[in-house]
Image 1 (cartoon, rainbow, N blue to C red):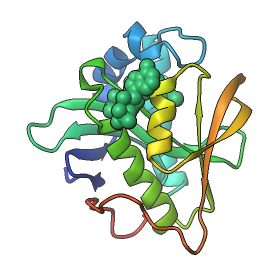
Image 2 (image 1 turned 90 degrees about the horizontal axis):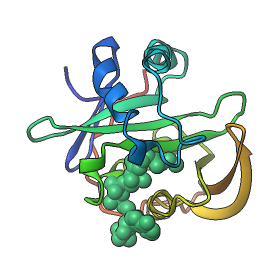
Image 3 (image 1 turned 135 degrees about the vertical axis):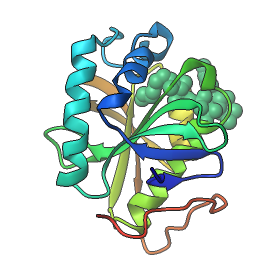
Length: 187
Ligand SMILES: CC(C)(COP(=O)(O)OP(=O)(O)OC[C@H]1O[C@@H](n2cnc3c(N)ncnc32)[C@H](O)[C@@H]1OP(=O)(O)O)[C@@H](O)C(=O)NCCC(=O)NCCS
């Protein structure tokens, strides 16, 4: 199946039922889950439930969603990226969760930048936010490198979080090289 979006090194694909095992494995690593919610690992039931909800989001909000990321060369599973509404809010967030062996190679920055650019340029979003555990310095750095600024504290997902945002204006231009192949139009 062709990728929904590609960056220099990554291909983003829609998530389907067959990806349950790899997503459960991702959420079973305490290093990965350390700063997610209360740090608890996801149960298989929670992952299956997410996998049922994710495809509905593609249909409900075209252009938004959660996508699994693989290496373009070789197809190695890297993790996932998301551009989606935070439940029960009108805020669109950029998010990511990568397998531990994939950390430290700039993948999160590469994927987040692509989604921010897509959100502003193709979807015409006005504001994109990112929310992190206050101590998740790596994620905060990724958001900053994707053009989101630290705007202080927020309350999302039932937690006090560090809040980052980027607001589109007429002068908005990506500050990074454009290496992204995006969907021709939101479906
Ligand atoms: C957070 C995460 C996505 C980062 O992925 P990554 O691919 O390693 O990120 P990148 O390589 O693109 O960039 C990481 C940046 O953070 C920096 N960094 C890493 N660990 C850090 C730390 N403990 N303190 C400060 N900065 C740190 C890196 O040096 C790099 O910045 P630099 O390029 O200026 O040197 C990854 O660790 C992950 O998936 N964690 C688990 C899930 C998670 O926390 N998701 C975010 C929820 S808000």
